[in-house]
Image (cartoon, rainbow, N blue to C red; front, side):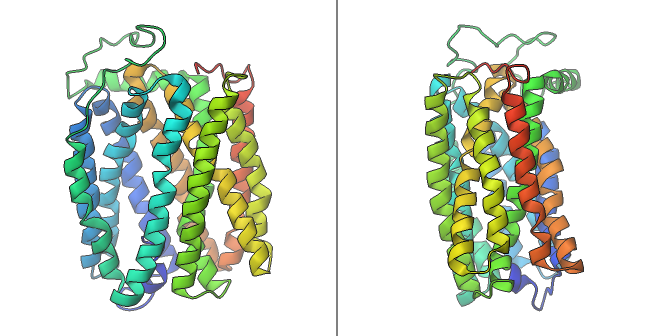
Length: 397
């Protein structure tokens, strides 16, 4: 939504610079990643549907409050608060899904779940651009935020399956050394927090997967935030045309790419224990030259085709990587593992990337600033293929 109305935010009364626009996303991500570890540990101990509902409610109210902002500080505060809601939902939902479906189906299940990202992003681009043009950017935030309160109520009706109940080997992974399981406790002790995160940092399989995810998120975060402005400012498209075109590309490539990646990962899993990482690595490597073409090719047909190819290949990894993360840790620590991955990928990924692209854009041009994206994509693919080697990752999938 912020990306869709970014050019309007550059006009009075806010008159934001590119650096300030980039910092709006950075502020949201900083709060998101710092609060994720808290909800991660709570999610491994407390009632998960209740935490999901709280997250969606905060998410929705904070989004709507952005429409009341009268200056940069107020808008920054509203966008940062959205991160609290996403921390609750983003850390707990994958763990709940993992406990609802068996391992051999998780590639597809996570593909379905994470397809909400491109579909929601596309809705934000298209709806934000249209509402902004006809009713102003403030109305765009109201339309995006208020309906979410109904979804918060719906979350309260979800079931909370037993942790580790879907594991193939009964009891496998449910005992965590040095920590007595206590699923009914809603407030984990500080000692258990430190022990859990220390175990994850020593898990080489987990660490390598998350490292590649951080480079991937750097590229995807910068691309998602700045692409509508790139199409409008560099390619000369109108506001509605830029947001609608990119939104359409995101929803189609996100849906197709995420589902295709999930299906391919589950199919290849029969032949390789590291299928999720191998498929993700090769697809991401192939996306790097396509992304470069999207920024340097002058003809509209050529750069549009390049954008489509790059997005398809990048979205193929979304469900697979998150499936790999929950599969290499104990069931009682899945929310914690997702939380730590969120902290890492955003701290090293899309916290710095929108801001960095904005700074480079102010100093040179947005076209020049976008050259960092293909490099990050290339790094992500290389790390995942390295992690997929038998000596680098012994996956439990």
